[in-house]
Amino acid sequence: MEVTMWMALATTIFTTMVAVPSLAANTVTFVFGDSLTDVGNNNYLQYSLAKSNYPWYGVDYVGGRPTGRFSNGRTIGDLISEKLGIPSPPPYLSLSRNNDALLKGVNYASGGAGILNSTGLYFIQRLSFDDQIQNFKKTTEVIKAKIGAQAAAKLFKEAIFFLGLGSNDYINNYLQPFLPTGRQYTPEQFVELLMRTLEGQLKTLYHLGARNMTFHGLGPLGCIPSQRVRSNTGQCLNQVNNMMLQFNSNVEKLLASLDRQLPGAKISFADTYGDVLDLIQNPTAYGFKVSNLPCCNVATNIGGLCLPNSQLCSNRREYVFWDAFHPTDAANAALADKLFKKLFTPPSGASTLFTAPSGAPAPSP
Image (tube, rainbow, N blue to C red; front, side, top):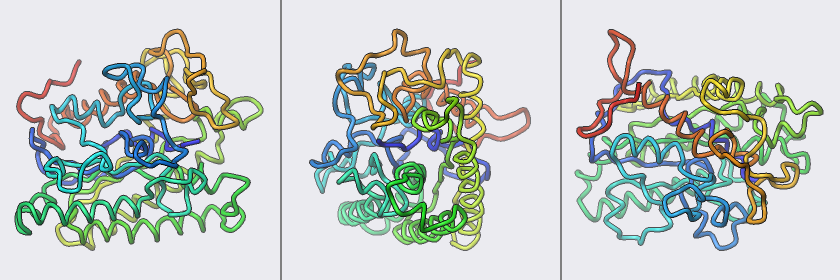
């Protein structure tokens, strides 16, 4: 089902070192993405088939109940927010139109979402990237009405925009044999379509006030359980991984171009492909034992989400994947810790990308 690979979202390992506002306890973040970053928006879509608001999702989250996160626990975004002492921004659809919480940041991400509006259609309801941008536009209008246009412009200029989409455009669109997209486009033509669409979307966000934008590249989707099952030997699908590398290369060039074109913009690319591949290929180095199978015993060939009657693994901390697509809380924690060290513990002589807010814990050794 939902294939928004968590790897796409290892949140902010920048390959383009650009100046961004120092993080502080009042940092405002706006999150756009898919199931990797969805913290409950799809719960409010009555007919959506891309939901995780039932057991055993959330079994290791606070309270042990499902929240709409596609994991047994926290997302990487949750973990980074914890380390920084900032609350994770709430799902947009959970807030009333004039809620003051909008001033502190919002999460627009939706499981099943893609860059293309046609992606994830069989989920019936999901918020595509265009939908998420329209919801942000509504947010800007409310914020301007609350604090005035000048203060609102300053808020958006200083806010950090985290973007992570694209994997569903492949797994839940281009690579689906029962959909026409894979027959209409060559891989090269398809990535060009994605880039044209994404360029327009990023420019729209810019004109709505976004300045500090980080786009997360795709990870080795050919190595997730839902793709391995398509291999006779259970190995990673190199053809799929090559498409991810092609996507990343094109996105990086697009972002660099937009960064030069748009005055005042600070647009960066977060390349997490190698880090995620290392976690999958060398799980024991991170304290895991299994990286090719999901902890939740799911039918990877007919859906791949963890169901209430599914059997769970005996030790969830030993598995990288929770279901056929998404990571366990422990895997998210491993990547978040590594990410936090990269952001706040630079090599000797180098400067940090961000300044940790007062009271934030130091990176663990």
